[in-house]
Amino acid sequence: MSGHGFHVHGPHDHELEHAASGGHGHGHGHGDGHHAAPAEEHSGGMSTTSKIAMCTAVIATFGAIFAYMGGATQANAGIYKNNAAIKKTEASNQWNYFQSKSTKQALAEFARDTATDDARKQGWQAKVARYEQEKTDIQTEAKKLEAEAGKWDAQSDEQMHQHHRWAQATTVLQVSIALAAIALLTKNKWLERAMFGVAAAGLAVGVLAAFHL
Image (tube, rainbow, N blue to C red; front, top):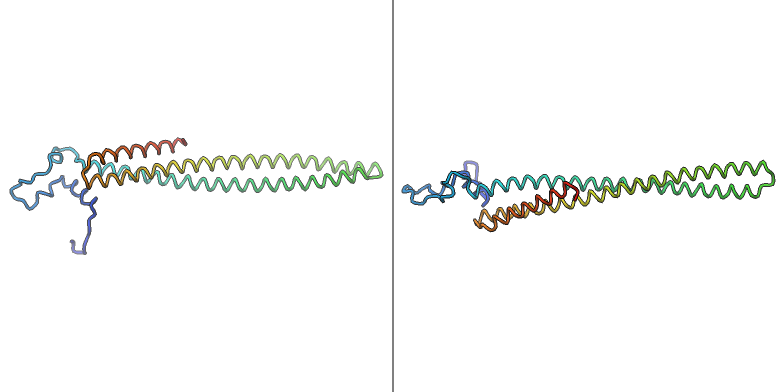
């Protein structure tokens, strides 16, 4: 208890403080020094607790990066899908315009065929030819817009696939951090090994995400 109120330490905080003190905190209050700290913590090297704590910090850092990348790719997927929808709408408008020109061409052809003099027939034929050219241009533009929409859809799907990879990697790293906390509390060696194994798997999935695999 400090002068400003109570401060409650969690189990993980206690383990980190114990590691930082070199494991000597258990000897306080015993003047004869019979309760010596484990040889592992007096050997001059890093204790198991310190190693796990350091690895947890590294894993958490990678987890934060993966989470950010997952959010970014999800946002990109939404933007690309919206762009695809815009291009599809524009293509649909072009096809409607194409249909309008086809209707006008059909009417012009009917007028040409029913005209009684050559001058009127030539005038309607010129309109038919103009509508035909306009239809060709409109069709080309509509197909171009459809192709662009397809590209945006493909990019959106790719980004969503990458987002799922980043999400998988983040989840696996979170599991690794949970195992690290349990390993710190229980001092269980196989949990410690499991933590490292799961962390390696999470990093591997992150590599797959980075290479769009």
